[in-house]
Image (cartoon, rainbow, N blue to C red; front, side, top):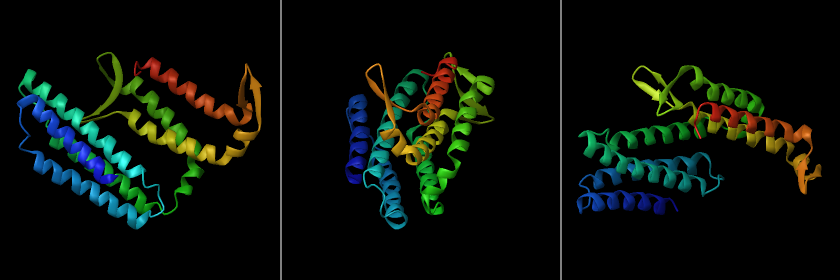
Length: 218
């Protein structure tokens, strides 16, 4: 599966070159070497430190990351044609490698992922702060406030929010899975959990939507 994800990415990269110039990009070999090395390193670390992890997660992550790199490469070409300059796909591959390296560092250093369950409410509070931050400190980009600029660096807090929300939901659903599944009531033909257990989930969802609408980030 991991090999298929890598091949799919390289096929997309080559297809973009064929569509634009009618030939395979000259940088394909270097790109393939770099992307394959990142994927192989990730596979080795996961096999060593998380042998019981779901084997589909890494291939899916690598595949989605690779397709994202292909799309950015296509946009870079359009940008270069229009403005005669482009950041280049090498930078994006480098940032993807850094992201995967951070992921692997967490896998190595976090011996027991259940430790995160203690901080589920800290995570959701952090997520809400990050969601609100662009409204006060964000740069307006095409009418949407999604980016925070710190000198030469810029980032989207929403990307960190996704991770924090995922940790919250994972911890909360693990803790209250029985109550959410069994203790339910019927409202307008739908079976819903009791408010005590369902309330925090609904509150986080509603607050997230309100902030996203306010920041025009839909």
